[in-house]
Image (cartoon, rainbow, N blue to C red; front, side, top):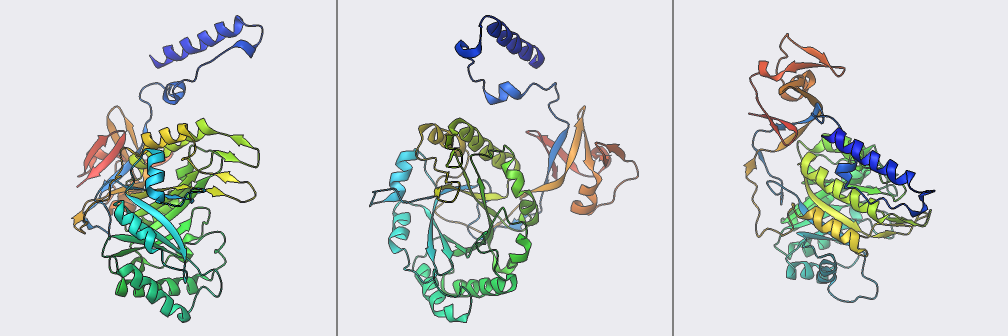
Length: 408
């Protein structure tokens, strides 16, 4: 059926082209992206993602048991002096569970912004950057850290702090000095702001992220910042996060901060439709393939660098519509309370399964490295890797929405 549809489409285009002297008067309407490119024979694929249902594990501070919070960071609205959260949500037509703000260590605590979050029933996420002047590390910051943590502690509500995120600008920090100061700050916040979840975060472009990780005991969540420039709208944007995801997802919930640019001063081209498609693809992929991403913050900003990337979705109706469509399946209302009960989590395997004629073949490395069980003697080479028929194993195997699930 799909081949017939493709033949029909190509034949129609050929007839239309033949009826015109040139292409100037030819109008070809956009096809839905799935219809235009999904022309494979059944079955659509034989290689499937594998998810392992974990033993019950205790939720991290302020972690939802399933799904992901929808959050946002936005530049101040030009000329607007009022309640930014209400204004941006009215513009987008979308409710958010959380909003993000930025401060430098030593600057004035944003009391009014926190009160606005409380009034709008949002979870506050505050990014604490290094001081604008002075050495960023050292015990001389103890008093300022204590004052800052005490300010947070005045609000007995769930809050998040992203402390000293590592970026290309700060990648020159000595990792040992950074880790020691991060742990120092964490201890102060634990003593003075017990309702704050502490997040360690890093830019996706930095591949040496393990060097800066402060350790499981110092971190409640881990975060990743991921941006796509308008001149490089790859549908595989999340592939850049894969190594980070596999490194941390078994032990920590993940916060993703991301933005997709629809304009750049590098070529002065608008790519609205491409950005709208990419936006929907990313949220759909997170929902389907990255279950340990528990918070997604869209970065509605302009970067005034050499390429002048514009990541704002709030300024264009097509992008706003794509955003509305994308976030509907996520958590857009802040819960009234949290618990840290133990629940099973979906752990994404680093390897794939092969499914053919209803038979599931598991990569033997899933058994050896991730399940710690012996591989039976009867194996087969499929797609260049050694695989075993799952029917030979004492494992509950299910296929759900195109993914293979291994349940206890």
